[in-house]
Length: 370
Image 1 (cartoon, rainbow, N blue to C red):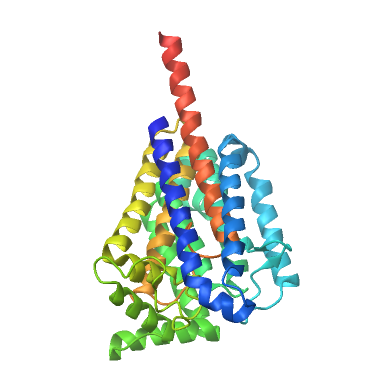
Image 2: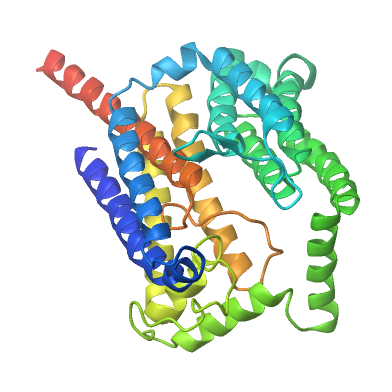
């Protein structure tokens, strides 16, 4: 288990390191145009990486059992923050998603993904076999999912709301809920989500554009078109770090959600596959850590954290490649952005603590037997 922790830590540091380099490469031209210095966005990202690293270390030292004890307080706290976001957060591109803390813009919906996993894991452990009963177990979890996902939805943030729902139902299924309950409820949620997507103009345009691209061919939008050009330009080995052409204002805000395209351009197919393998490796390590955990809460929490990381990574890659509609989901540990990288780092810290606690318990049992 100790070796797994070291490998996990190393993989996350590698992703952060590449993220620093890629953000510098992707943001330099835009930063020079807007701030008259190529280093402004890079420095901002660097500070957030440092904060994220500290958060990883801090949360690795906090016993994960504490989240089970206080899951009700945490879920009520995130609901309050989501409500506060709707009230005080300024609208950016038509959405109220960020609370400005001065040194960083905090996005409560990112934290909500982890807290809903914590609370559901705690509920499933308490309910035990009752989670198989629709009324006495399964239905009670729906209350929290609907509230959290609903508050994120009306920001509006359709993509993050959908991820919260999918992540929650995956946890429920892994936790023992009946497949017919999961699929039946998820089908209803999908139908409702489809209606909501047609109500909000930005999500309607994305969905209709995606459908049109499939039916009639062509690209979803200018970002996807330029992202695909970047991926194609990279070839097998890429054009080299710092030599991206699409980051010279051809691809809008290439340092953010579409940084995977700059990765593909500069490091080529080999680079993109390597990074995706790293995400898969983190997921597999997370699964092993979760499986070896002594309690059901640790197992479900470890699985949920690992699944969220790999799920987000492959959604981001799918969007950049034009396979999925544009979502606004960041590439974990690499994309520019404060809340995302910090929350993902906190998550890995929790995962490391689950592993360390399990290792200590195993060593204690071995010592008692010996």
